Image (cartoon, rainbow, N blue to C red; front, side, top):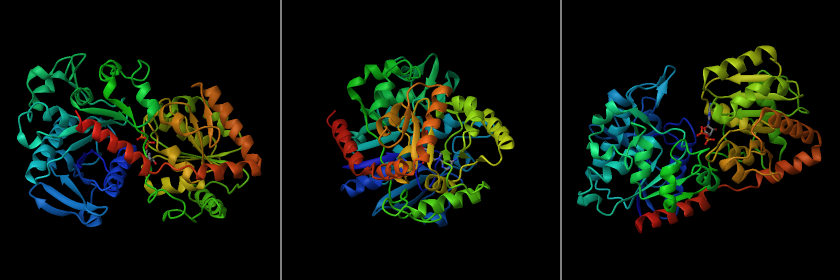
Length: 462
Ligand code: ADP
């Protein structure tokens, strides 16, 4: 099959979250299954040509190769992409995001024609590439080039929908006929994700549980009705992990490599992390790691309410992430109050993230909702025991055999579960057995990519 993967962020070129991990790893797994895959993404300012051997192809298009022969096409536009921040900066979302990503979608469809890549499937991800299925079924509806092309939409987080004022609609180049309940209209505003959901041939999200959850009022962010209408075409496929990037056996960023049968390196990683984070070396006290956006979705609301209590529980806490100013402030206050207990790095830092996954004992991920979650999958591989709220992909991947799970979303339940983990940590035999079990879980792409192939076949059959 010929598959064009269209995503607004792709590892190793640009990343703000799990979408990039998926969009970078899935093509490699599909190629290993014998599929013909290309990737199309915007060329952001931070993507360095020399680092990735990126060559110019056209005036506004550059290209490189990943895997064996997966071509990655970068769309350039100085006005739109040659700036800091993929989607926004400190003052919020970029004001011209509709212009930026509608341009990306249109240019992608023209580009595929120019390079003669006639896809069986265009696989789009999240709202930023959702105008592709919309344009295919409107502006390109009669284009013979795309006659047999089907679209698959993966929703990585239904909380981000690409909402814009109706005034901006003319910029899309679409007839007003499409600004209806059956199209992009959503409470008199433009909803790009909704457009993608209405016009894609097949829809999936990144875990079976989240696929069910988003069809309910509680998790659907207003789009549950749309999904319900399309429920026969809605599926859930758990994300995989690229173990060539995320494995303590081969990780080049960690203090010492380790495996389930030889765990001494993990202690070295913990010491290394404590040193970097300026925390005292305490091998008998559990070190809890967090690598996350600092947002209520990620559980920072209940964490903010309980952090003071948690800091007094005989543990260490290393937090890496950026997000809402409110949570930056609360966490900074805690660092002032408990400098020997908490370390806070308010930034995006891939290398430090690797060190945290490897050097922590527990990985805290109390997300209120979580489409799939990669943090818990990565931490399992590094023998860092996940502590999660039972929701979405966390519910599908963490259980009492490999981690700690709480099922009432409250600070009290969070604190009680941290207490349980701290107590278990004290029993060395129990803890080591848990670590070894956790490390043996396999969430590689090998299996999950087969799920996508079935999904593509379903789309093709439409
Ligand atoms: P999200 O909802 O943010 O996409 P996921 O758990 O699916 O959450 O994926 C998050 C990905 O981004 C993981 O690979 C995680 O390690 C990474 N990540 C998140 N925040 C940071 C950060 N501040 N620095 C480095 N990596 C980060």
